[in-house]
Length: 118
Image: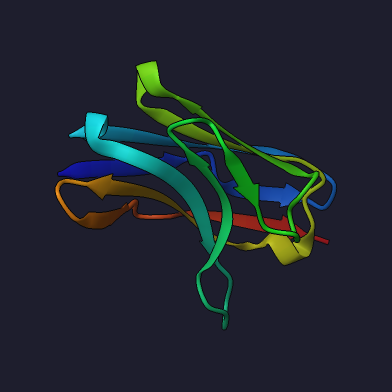
């Protein structure tokens, strides 16, 4: 079992920055990859950024160059540095962890609201 708790969301003006954090607990040694997803009003949950155990990263085109995902394995934490925020970034952001024990399983945090005002 893995528990994920997001923090760092809030209200920010366009052009501003936020740093989201995800604290993982439980069977953290089994985490193979972690990711940030977001769900905007009326839209499907979408992958924002992903980082695997080898620190290989992926970014959605919409956030490439503006967001940076990082992971601190010693602290069982993952971060999303969001710069140059746009109103289109407004969404609930979810922390995700993928586990292989022994099959693929996904765990989710409760989400944190990010609102970017124009």
